[in-house]
Image: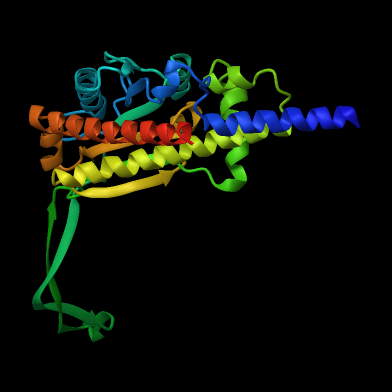
Length: 313
């Protein structure tokens, strides 16, 4: 009986401690507790032999790197109390598994992945312009006779791809798979991650461990969603078309493999000539980075306010 009671108390203590930390992994009373956002990992999409999407004159990997380098510099200038780490600063290729390992090794508090979108090839158009007569034949051999019929006539033409705008993705995990995904993230793939180190002494089947993992996953999801919505709001403020913040699972595996809140930002459509020019311009890249920094500042302020309110109770 005493053993059961002790086990129950330990479980309750673990869960209570996790709730009080609210996924932050901080020790009460430390200075770090006052700064929930200390380090941002910036991941320029693709690289090296992986070109990503292609436009009329540029590659996604180069646009992603150029924007990421500028973003790194602007964060350092505008938010000096936050450290940054670039997954790559040159044209090299790292598989997504390696990127996630680096991000977790660096103990980031936020993962921002930079990409450029594509929307297929040129668009075909067709317009009705009237009727025309065509000759057709009926019968065979000597009985074959020609006759005319009227059919609809159309004018057809193509235009460059018109898709434009930004969209920000987070990894969507439904509730039935949430705990399994988190456990796989922290145990099977990345034993060097922050969460794995925190949980390494627990048995994988221990309900306390699953509670903590589930809470961390929910915290990461909530914070990722809040930042994604904020980013798209800031893009709208500067006149960009927003294709909204979205959840996705395919093609953004790295977002669920990092032990931190994570977003993937599609900065524009490289397949649209107008957008491609914008994405490659100094003005366009600067505007994108300014938008992201404003969104990160809002995100950071919200975290600090939430922590302050929690501590003030």
